[in-house]
Image (cartoon, rainbow, N blue to C red; front, side):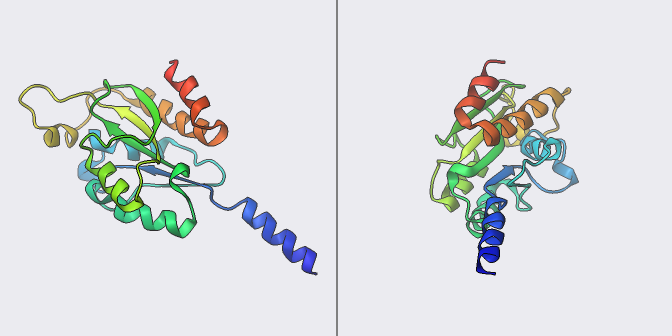
Length: 179
């Protein structure tokens, strides 16, 4: 009987959640189609990989860490197994880039995550939204609706998440950055 219990626990442990995949955005219909919500859009597109939990925080962007850090602790997931999908002003619209850690570059959602996780070493799927036109405030730009079709960018970002989980960050970077 003891062997049966050990095997049962071993099987449960092997199928437990090993990755936390987070799409950053703001809740509510008002923000659904905005540039700041591309992270939510990736989660909507993604078929969550096995052994992963895919979430869209129900907090506003600037408080993302309030939601993500306690969830990661409860699931026992370290920062190197947290993948955050988010908008990136410093990349041209349509671009998708992957990295581990780094600066938050003024992104309040990332600042909140870093503060609450106690590290910058989580993985990032960065979706380029470009810079606002001259005379447009950043906050107005990121909270305005996306212009044009971004379905290819969202699909590529979802594929990037799957590649990170299946093959690791370096292999995913090699494949995604080559496109």
